[in-house]
Amino acid sequence: MKTNNLVNTHQLTLLAVIVAANVAIARVFLIPIPMTHGNVNLCDTGIFLAAWLFGSKKGGVVGGLSGFLLDLISGYPQYMVFSLIVHGLEGFIVGKLTEDKKISAKSLIVSLIAGVLFMLLGYLVSDSLLYKFSTGIIAVPMNVIQGLVGALVAVPLFWRLRKLVK
Image (cartoon, rainbow, N blue to C red; front, side):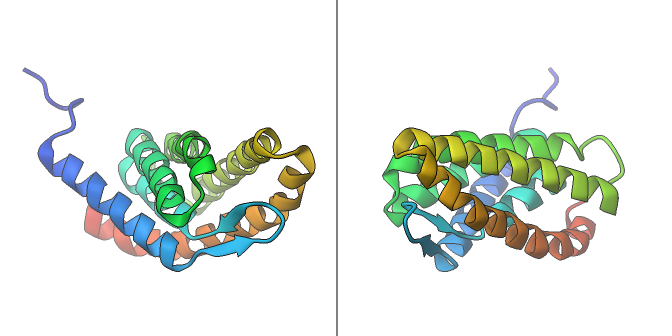
């Protein structure tokens, strides 16, 4: 029986620890955004790292669960489902663009741009559905900052961690 597609106990435990660490770090560095009902945090850092180190599926799981749980414990329950979808797909996209190939600075940048653009679009739609379009527009610059800060923290960490994980 093949088990290479199944998640074993070790992988499940590793994902749970990564999600917990990501939520804890993002919660510590959480800055509310005035006029938007949202916040800036470091959740994207963990999503990028999980996607680069473990691939699209695990990056998607870490992204979705981290975003969902962070909103749950931070007082933003209206965003939980949106964050599950947006950050889950963000992690999947970033991982898909870098898995099955040798990761280079160029592939990291391309995956970051795609992931951050998807996150921006996802939260523009989320804010527009929850509140109004102007709320979504107001949040765009702060979401850009969140994505950029997440990338700036994730890239140097990735170059260090990849040797330990592989």
